[in-house]
Image (cartoon, rainbow, N blue to C red; front, side, top):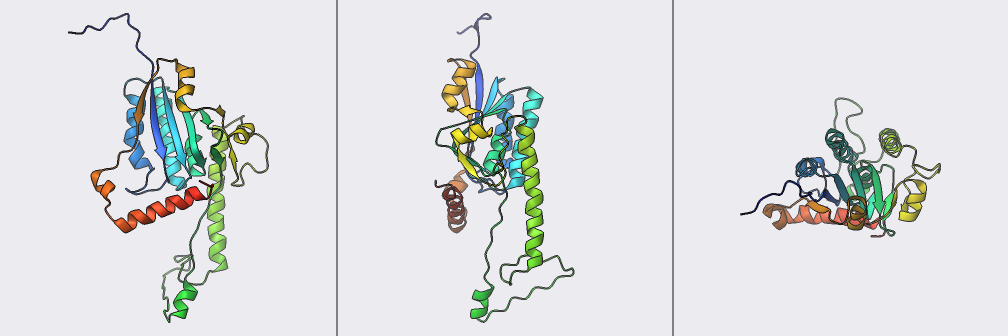
Length: 265
């Protein structure tokens, strides 16, 4: 029989939450608010952790999902009065940096890629292909703005202008969030919000991160050598591992691979 000694000091605990992959809505997306919500709730509430560490490796994705996850982190941190640290692995770009900025401080490997504070929209145009094969696209709407940037119709300048307006407004939301979270830390640099990325040392000089460091040694430095790590990561179900749709899974992997490839990874 074991007895708990009242004077025995408990080892400090830090919850570690992994956020890896593209940020998007949907069951197959590696990172989204619905999937991370139960992990974050447990990380902040279970075992009375002294801190929560976010280990981030993401090229970005949905700005809305990024915002939802970051807002959840901030709500839980304020509610539990727990500090949050972010650790960047290969990349924290675009939405990935949005997640990192939810932390009180950000650390990265010297070879990490950080930044890409901007918004992108990509599509394709197939109207010439259809025309060559004798296919005619027909679209009818009750109002003029209901159909926009149909990939099977020629691009309209007014549609492009509307899209750029939306992207600009979204960029402002992103920029405002980063300025608020990194208040007083950011350097005055004209390229800071142009979508550029930097490696860790330059990112530190610009105030995008706070230092160079890895999760285990840094947390031991902050909370002592006897700190215990409680690791939380998204587990794929048996159904997901074997694939609900091979084609859909392959397309998702290709898209994610392309997103990482933009940063040379």
